[in-house]
Image (cartoon, rainbow, N blue to C red; front, side, top):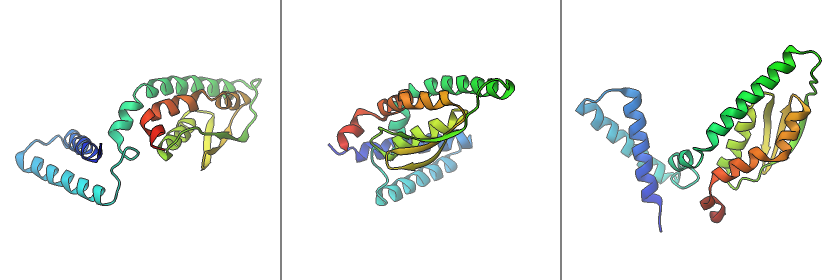
Length: 167
């Protein structure tokens, strides 16, 4: 089954919804210009080969839905840990650069993983080379947490079964 028409339709609806939400203008002329703009964008995206399951943000948003609340909690926990380390001179700070493997099957999955690491206070993704991420961490606990693979597994799960089968 060719999912390109479905992807185009969903992408068009998402683009139109964003346009309407951001503009807040619902006059017939402006809505018709928005529709023309969305159609032109869809046509260009299709011609450029940018409409597939990896580049389609609507599917990703649905699949990653359960991941964002979990990541938000991790960001808050890490923020408190970093604040404690900064405010308490007795807490160990041992900045280290290390590498961690990424098990995601798509570039989008690896980018989400790398950005999730960077969003978590106390860690920064410095480089992505294939399935290896170079990370700077503020403490040994941050390294242990990333090496445990919890965040990696959650991003891979959110990446979706369809992408695993496609590769």
